[in-house]
Length: 98
Image 1 (cartoon, helix red, strand yellow):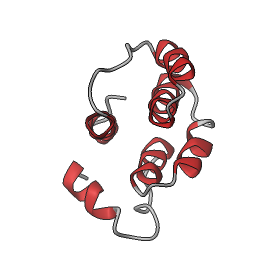
Image 2 (tube, rainbow, N blue to C red):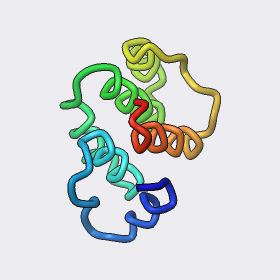
Image 3 (cartoon, rainbow, N blue to C red):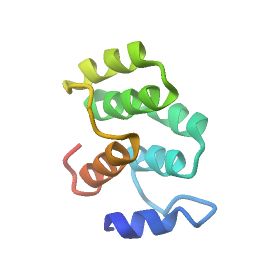
Image 4 (cartoon, rainbow, N blue to C red):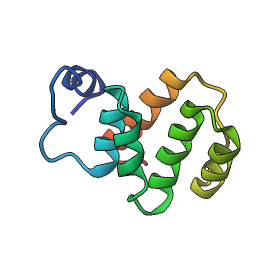
């Protein structure tokens, strides 16, 4: 799946069949359902889960909590916009790099 295909899938009522939990969390966030995305992210172990968790708390405006999760993910707090970061995370996940 490509980023444009993933973005197009946001028009559906359910995430694409068979995608991993990390992409599912980002899909729900792309749909505007922060709570669902956060619920999923909390159950993703390791740096990928921490990275998504960090992004979600940054989006929420809880920057102290976001910084904690970025550190857990081994990443710096980005200077990119939230939209740019969302696309970066999704791209990394689609390419198996996150």
